[in-house]
Image (cartoon, rainbow over all chains, first blue to last red; front, side, top):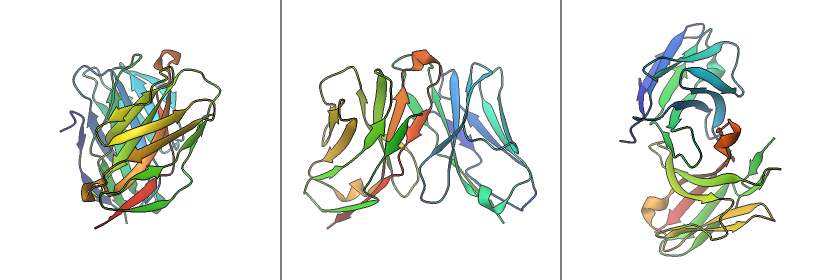
Length: 113
Length: 117
């Protein structure tokens, strides 16, 4: 157990639907990052939150949004889903300071049918 | 923008032999971190080894070691005494100094390593 918890592990949904992925960071970590990994691809950075505030944005579609709550857990909302959104979505957390480690969750496998 | 390149999509090695995976990166920063992550079939991202750019000494973790050439912007991973459990996708990744406020990881496209019994 890495200490970063992602739920659900698997999700199957239809095109046009909306889903929410949840991430609880490792205890003491203030930063949460979301990454998308399409089939046999590298991980693409989507968005980062630090202590409740958006810190950096990557290649995140307008149909996607995220937030970090006061208890530091984060949710990634994906709406108007398309077949191409099928991917593995990883959450990672870090302390947020120099030298801080970076811990990944086990990912949520999203399949859009 | 920083980029990470892994030019070997696939590699194979005989069990107990040594294999080297290549990675090059592009950055204008002087202070940063480099990582190798392993992704087995379970899809979990597992940190193999990390290197801080300001350290001259190459990092080592048991059978895993790196050859960090800062001037050449090269960061290769050497796996000695390869084991069946080493079979996985290996990703090279770069992270800028977090003091700059953006700590995202930039990943290469990965190298699939096969271990031949």
